[in-house]
Image (cartoon, rainbow, N blue to C red; front, top):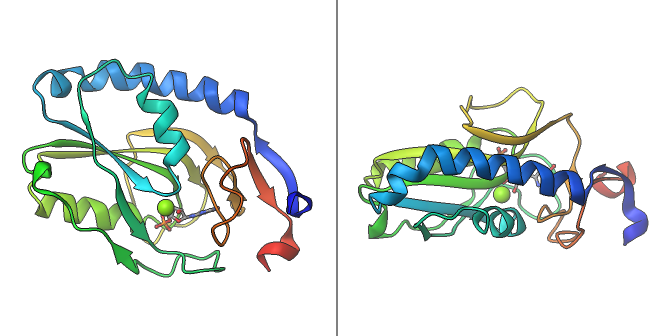
Length: 182
Ligand code: IMP
Ligand code: MG
């Protein structure tokens, strides 16, 4: 229910502006890889659905989009509990320069897990682009090449981010009321 929303943390216009800035940098940084035909953009589903859709349409480069799934938040939990599920990586990763796109960097486990699997699958290099980076003590330190916004520790939803599968469709990024997340 929308009454579960406490406040908007980042509105849709701020998100759009920031994505334009990120895209400008990505174009500069990834043109060579794209020209060589080895750029793969890898959205981590489902949270980065809208972020990826908005971002890649601002990249006039040649690349493949290869989504993956990594799950670390079973059901109504708001705390990362380690990786519970991960998709198999395809052959096309071999020799690729992979730009992993995720909604939010929290404990770091998701991106750490992906980095290991991608390198094992033969990726040449792995970069990370996250829309949000939470200000928390991370279980695993992750060097993020591209960060949309640094945010304080809070459970956020909207623009792809969910709580128990809900609220992904909110156009802004919002903080849920305390009673909802428990
Ligand atoms: P990490 O593995 O702990 O870094 O968590 C990353 C994943 O947890 C993200 O891809 C999100 O799917 C989910 N996540 C972490 N924090 C939040 C949040 O505040 N709201 C919604 N999902 C979150
Ligand atoms: Mg995720």
